[in-house]
Amino acid sequence: MSEPDNTTGPQVALIVGGGPGISASCARLFASEGMRVAIAARNPDKPVLKTLSQNQDVKCYQCDASQEDAVEKLFQQVIHDLGVPSLVVHNIDGRSGDIFRKGIDEVEPRLVRDTLNNSAFSAFLVGQQAAKCMLSNPVVNQGHRGTIIFTNASAAIKGYPRSGAFAMASHGKSGLAQSMARELMPKGIHVAHVPIDAAIGWTQADGTRSHRRAGANVEDNQADPDAIAKTYLHLHQQPRSTWTFEVVLRPWLETW
Image (cartoon, rainbow, N blue to C red; front, side, top):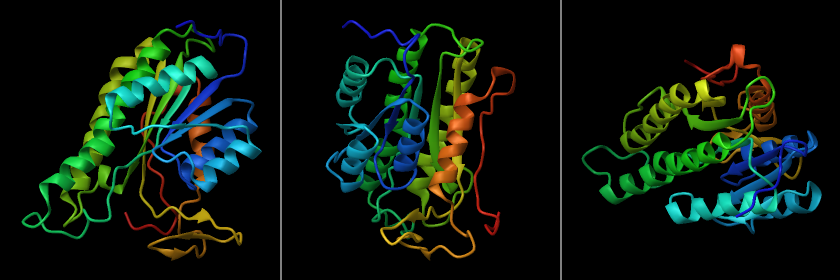
C-alpha cells in the first residue's frame, strides 16, 4: 500500500477508544491544532463521535482493539485515508462494571480474561502497530518520529481490594509502556504513560461536568478531560532532551 507523504502536510493523530471524555477532548484539541484526526471505537455511531465528525472533521472508524486483525486493518485504513500517524493515544482501560467489588474467591475467570484483553492486550496491539508505522517516519523536529500515549487508571499504581483483575490489567499496561519507552525512545519515538488518579468529569449537555458514579463536579474535584488533552498535546510537543515518560494526573483534592 502506498503511503501519503507526511513530511510537509498536517500531522496525523489517531485516538483508539471513543467516548465523550478524554477521547473527545483530545480529538477537538488536536483538530484545532491543525492535525488530521482519526478516532476508533467499537461503536463509531455514538452521538459524540458523529458530532466530532460533523463539527471538527474527525474521521471515525470501527475497531475492536482487542482483536489483532482489526487493529492492523485500522492502521492500514488511517494511513490510506489520512497518512502515517505521528501521535497515537490508547485510551481504553478495559474495565467492566461486573468486574469490580468482587473478592478474589468469587470473580469469574472469563471476566478477568476479558479485562486483560480489552486493556493490556489491546494496548500491546495498538502500541505495536503504532511503533511499526512511526519507525518508518522520517526523523523530524530534532529527532522526533512520533508519540505514543497510554492512558491508565489509579490501578496502575494502587491495587485496590476486590479489584484484582483491573489491577492486573492496569499494571500490565504500565509495564508495557515502560518497556516500549526504553526500546523506542532511543529510536525517536516518545512513549508516555498517564495514570489518571481521579474520576473524570466530562461536560454534559447543560454545561456542567459530572461522572456517572462520582456525581457532579464540585470545586474541581474531578479531572477535566479538556485539561488532560492539553497535557497529552504538551507531551507530544516536548523536546527530546526532556521527554516525560510518566505523569500522574489527579485533582488537588484527591487522596494519595
